[in-house]
Image 1: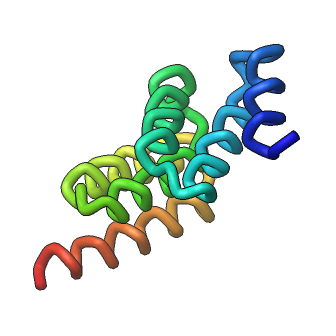
Image 2: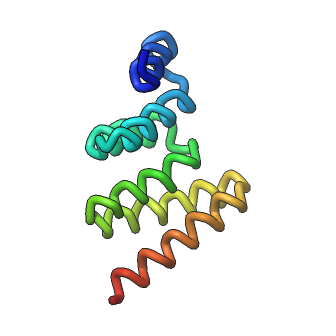
Length: 107
């Protein structure tokens, strides 16, 4: 059974498990299905907006498909969520990604 199918199976048995949904989104990206990766992580962001790892990866996927303004919005939201939850490491990573992206947008 593929990793993708195994994650789908896990998610079917526990549809509210944020980690499994996050892992599924990453697995979609790994098999080059960015639209499904984005949809999966957007669903997670809607259902569990405090799940901080979502923002870094989702922003990166938007960036990868050329939707840089959306990536910027996602990174900014993630910084707010990470800061509010006291996750300084994630906040720092998101700020770095945002700064890098803003450099791209200026050039």
